[in-house]
Length: 170
Ligand SMILES: Nc1nc2c(ncn2[C@@H]2O[C@H](COP(=O)(O)OP(=O)(O)OP(=O)(O)O)[C@@H](O)[C@H]2O)c(=O)[nH]1
Image (tube, rainbow, N blue to C red; front, side, top):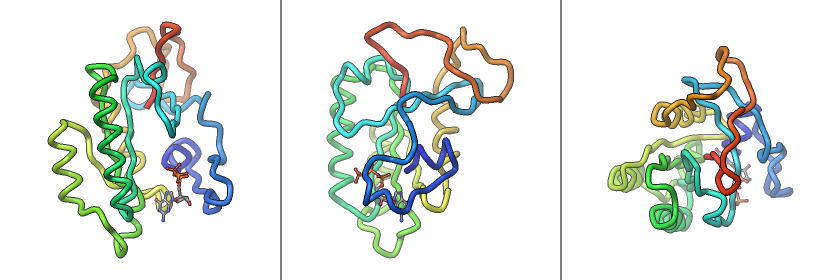
């Protein structure tokens, strides 16, 4: 939902009925932010072959589900052990429009993010809160691709071909 909000400025309320997001997120061009291009790949189970070479990873939890925050910690451990050393990690506490049924305190999540030097932000894909900001924060920490074909702040395709075994994603 966060990717759909960012890329298409769209939120699908019926996504629970059809768990596959209503947009193609595996091959997409997105806006250039601070001379960075972002290619989104979404994973429910990660294999190192996919995130090796990634510039950034966004790990999302649901602020209304403590379980999801515990799962997030497992992803962080996995990335720290098997991910690129310099990967930018961003932790997004999504559904902050549901603050009345919150289970994960902001302070706890923020402190955890600080402890692993990760970006932290609470978002709402539904209400379009902090989604743009999430990716802007990430883009500020990723060095621009030197050989990217950047003419302006228009959308464009990634021109650099990464090695076969690596991809850039977040
Ligand atoms: N209230 C609210 N609901 C959201 C928000 N973002 C996503 N949802 C809903 O939460 C459910 C899961 O959203 P997804 O984007 O599919 O997230 P996911 O992590 O792929 O979900 P899973 O399929 O459960 O793993 C859907 O019913 C969405 O409509 C949000 O910001 N606020």
